[in-house]
Length: 378
Image (cartoon, rainbow, N blue to C red):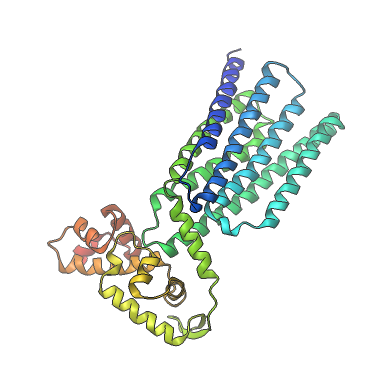
């Protein structure tokens, strides 16, 4: 009796919270700028996901406690909502982080799969009976599990491409606001992957999943709203990366560090000019500017961002983030030895790191030791 009452209030609470989150997302306003167009599209899709789950919870509440029906019908609605939501979440994620790389064929494929899946569930409820009906329902659950796995791989690729774009554009690629993405992605993965199992499990397992789902929805909502304040940074880096990738210049054959021949789209004379400008910018301490972007570096050097990006990525074999990071760490190594009167915090600020903690972690990642260990050993 207690379990039934607890489930009654849990499902109702989930419906109220999810409905409120969806409505608030629809009402949320961002600056009326062209750069927020993709963010607003993603916001609308995510709001639709929240409202879809709110509708599903309300229907389940009615089917379980007001007008009980066949369990097969209840499970069918459950599976249908999870499949549709998994597609919508993936589209929202792609629209938010990598809008210029959305493949229309993938969109058509998702729509076809969704329609076929819904038709199977309709056939299962209206035309089949007995074990045949149960077997088709199990098949739909297994298909949902496999489909979520595929979408998760796609989401991981989108995330990695976004991080790559940020590192190509920013010297400090805003690690703080990007940390939430793996957490949200993993949470959604677990939530979606458990659906095919939970629908055939006991009532207690279903209650636990509903409670975890409520927490996940609230966390996703908070992270998404927080992301609005940084979205232009991601959009700018994505647009710049696409612009750089579209560049097409004459080829140049040079030797890399290993002695192998590699081809570069920069002319030999231009490559030499960029190398000289690189040295001048380094001597002037341009890399010490906290948060410097590749646009700012290119402007200071008097060159084109696309050329500078190609020079850094293909000739130096680094991202802009790594290029600037290595210059900062090189200077920090010298200061730690030659200026022992300076603290680690002072050196971090001098070479352009936003904080001493970021400096220490980056320094150790590059050199293998902490700044203090470096100072003691030299």
